[in-house]
Image 1 (cartoon, rainbow, N blue to C red):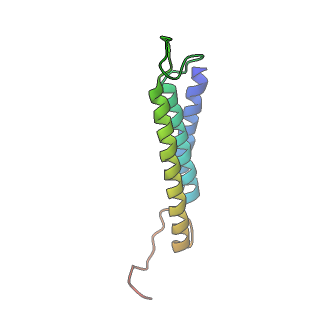
Image 2 (image 1 turned 30 degrees about the vertical axis):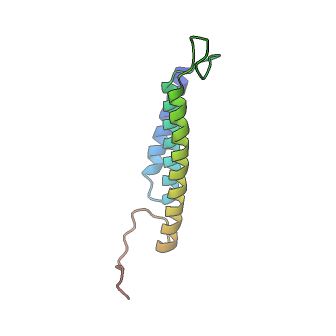
Image 3 (image 1 turned 90 degrees about the horizontal axis):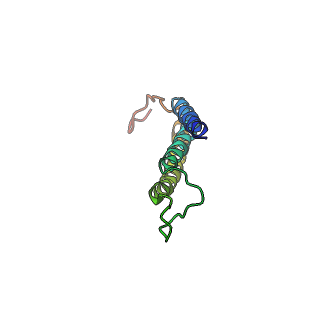
Length: 114
């Protein structure tokens, strides 16, 4: 089970890196999202999955570690904000430049009229 979990995290990371290296903005947004999912799974796995154990301290001596759960919850919120910002930034770049290539160089300078 741990091997399958680690392979899934590795596949998400490799697909995310592959998409980030594309020249268009939409695959970059998808790649960043996949990387954030991989980090969430990695953080969740760092707390060691426990079955039938309390999530908070109780009279029982065995409990689940709450720190990875809090980190994943924070990472989900930050990932959502990052994705929203990336989408808005790519839409703005598409409107200003006319296409969605990331590394496009323009010849007209700011403040120079043709």
